[in-house]
Amino acid sequence: MKEHAICARKRLYERMEKKSAALLFSGSAPHKTNDQSYHYTPQRNFLYLTNLPEENMILLMTKGDEEEKTYLFIEENTERRIKWEGARLTKEEAHERSGIPLEQIHYLDRFARTFGSLVQHSGRSAIGGPLETLYLDLAPRSVKDTPESLKKTKDIRRNYPELKIKDLNSHTAYLRMFKSEAEIDKIKQAIHHTRKGLSNILANLSRRTHEYQLQADFLHAITLSGSEGTAFDTIAASGKNATVLHYTDNKDPLDKKDLILFDLGALHESYAADISRTFPLSGKYSKRQREVYEAVLRVQKETIKKVRPDMTWKDLNAFAKERLTKEAQGLGLLEGDEGIEKYYYHTVGHFLGLDVHDVGFINEPFRKGMVLTIEPGLYIAEEGIGVRIEDNILVTDKGALNLSESIPKDPDEIERIIGESS
Image 1 (cartoon, rainbow, N blue to C red):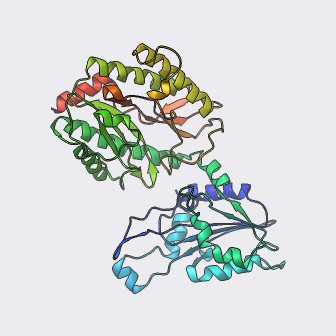
Image 2: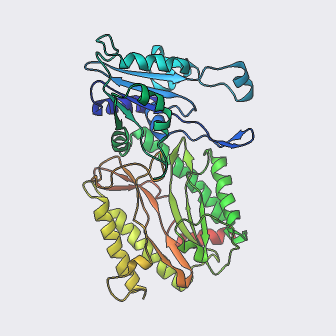
Image 3: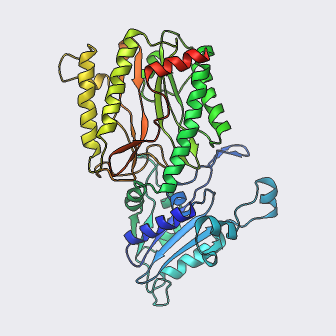
């Protein structure tokens, strides 16, 4: 992944203005309680550009008229930190993992001086003149949230009001849509862990009594497989719970007459899988359950076949909605072409990568190297039936490659596996 990070920085430099700098922070784990913090999650743009999943680092990329330089600022190891928390990466280790020149890796106390030298109004500046533009990661966590980079650069923006602030995300979101071979390999490995987890669920389905037990079966298996955990909160939604799109309570008892919908995914080195499957708790789909399941499966397979370069999300969503409407008519849910929103109330997919709902531009035509999810569903609350089937798809020159093809979704195969495990 070092080569990937080097290439990602090169591509970002190509999009930056001259006399500019990009400033990114790796972040830190928020305080949880007393002397404990939450688990640290790397800031994704920082990780994408450095291959360094460690707290309290700063990346500074500068672009002058003729020269580009990348600086990294890291925490210095102390005896106490080594004993209590473990050693931080050394300069040499950070260089080896990121490809950033060793002589441009410093401790954090050097950052203010280095940045100040860029802003000086002199031809001696490292970029050949005064810094004019500063790119920051301005994506807020929510509409009410101030982006973390604005909080961290408050003094910089006050001391250097002449700097033009621009959002880095317009560039990183575009670049991250196109996965390198190394990134695709990480996603494949995340899918491999996820398949192990779903296999463990199927093996234990007949003997579990509550949703949370099956959630635990998934986590147990992916952890043994080498995953660092779940890519998002697991959905294990039985019966009517499956008609709630983001149901994550996973606390209800299981009723053998019901279906159970799983929406889950493992992480592998911060890259995500995102898979949905719907299983019969009795081991056999009822006639009605199979009708609904096969309707969704037909739409999913047809939608995957539609994926190709130059198609857009708008086109794909329109196709899936039209096909689900026809299937709903066949199931007796609709009489005309209106009203599918009652039974299908989300889009057919999203980008996948370092985030489960990965960054990207929904109006951008599909191109080779994009990774998508395809996940149609039907949710019939009055019948207590919710079905969603989701796979992870790589866009190729020729169309779609299903990266999660090995995870069972044929209803006969699912029944056979459950039967063999009972």
